[in-house]
Image (cartoon, rainbow, N blue to C red):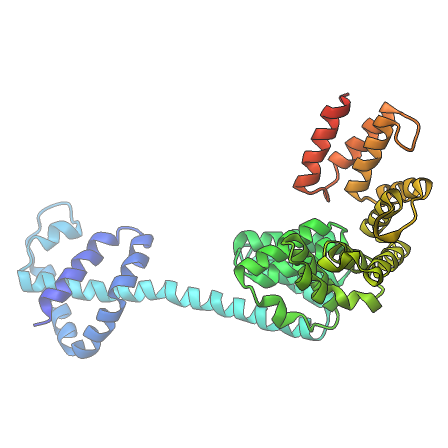
Length: 383
């Protein structure tokens, strides 16, 4: 006694199929039952369909010639048979969407397979060209934008890479690898704090992700720097030192600077050997072009921290070097120096200039921006 069940979902089919969308929605409900029913009752369906056709031909004409009017002349059994035969036809139409979706999925799989091949062989130009075509064909594919970002990152275009990774994150925001790769792009753009924020988001999504990927030879130092700086942000000084200690023998200026900062906040910072290590790390970081390292070294000279001999003139020169290199804290500090005449001639116009530069600096953290506003109020540095 299958007929009551079949009639129930056939009524749903006929009522929902006024549009193509209706057919597609209905297909989701009837697929499993329809295939099984027609396989088991193929002979009955053929006979019933023929009977329905005969009844239609013999049905009294009620005017208008519409299917609804003709169906008024059918017996109950013939009406059900007509519904079955039409449902079968609609099923075949609905399968067209299924086939189309399968083709689209196959095309996406082909793009992904080829992209992985280009990535493995480091064929960055080919990967970039393929990704452009993929994005054109499937603009909402997060993987298409992700691979375009990888190609751009490896072709020394971190700005384009950051844009593509951002679009990939907008489309699918729970992929930790996308955040890590965008962080790498930010590092190359010297947007260190944005890189740190991306790594922190990555660890929220998957805490052990970087542990599994940190052995990547090409980007190992960048990844370790992101990891260590995130630990510094959480004030986990011992853990940060353990991660960042790789930079002692490295030529990575920002890594040395971050390690020195972690050491300066650790319990062992009063140790003479630790103080010497901090000074050496910051001297090396500044020499290697790290704007944060130069700023931290300037603070040591100005305040005489960690055993450093006070040298205000040297400190001012280092603050200026760091500020010109784009470090927002140095720019803010110079604004305060010029506003108060501390170590430099008092110059409110120069103070306003440096404050404006710091305020427009994309590398400025939320804390730095609050300090900028406090400095503006304190010294009345309004235009």
